[in-house]
Image 1 (spheres, rainbow, N blue to C red):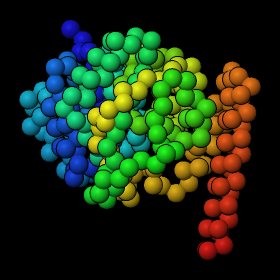
Image 2: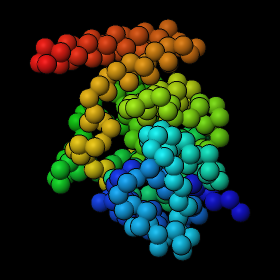
Image 3: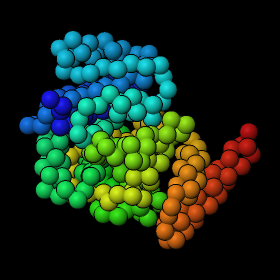
Length: 261
């Protein structure tokens, strides 16, 4: 029988954190799931660390040459057999009842085909509180999502059959790929929120995509794409204004870097 949930962990050279992430999934309580680890061409000892779990069929291990996190997630989605799909970044971890709490909540509220939970934020070893602008919301959150990426991959769970409707992660985007997907999702579907922290999210590492220079460039690309969709006047206005704002920010940053060189 197919599992209820397919959990997808994309990873690239995260030997220091991959076991923490994997073990946090394997400790999940009372939910039938499969765990798919997609190794995006790691050159460290990631594979060796996972060998025991691979041999004991605790995880499904997929390897591909380095193509980026979008391609890795997409490979996992294509291999998934579950009714629901959940993602976990390889430097984050779940609390043991994460999947149980979310699947029970979604069963009780079938109007939601996608939902997320609150998170515990750890930045450079210290717990911090998310800012007001980062507060997660429930329902029709497209307008809020235009301004800021309000859905965390590690916290989300969604029906697998949503992907044929909204598309997969955009493999041409080096960064901002989650922002792009969530725009395509929230323009059509409401998002549920389980108001309980079920994820420990680690911030501040230099290798995280959110820390990369030029993030606004890729968010502009995502906004240009969403503007080709059939939007309401309010949605179109919000997306256009945010695109113009991010273009100004990116161009100002590029001019500053040119001057410094």
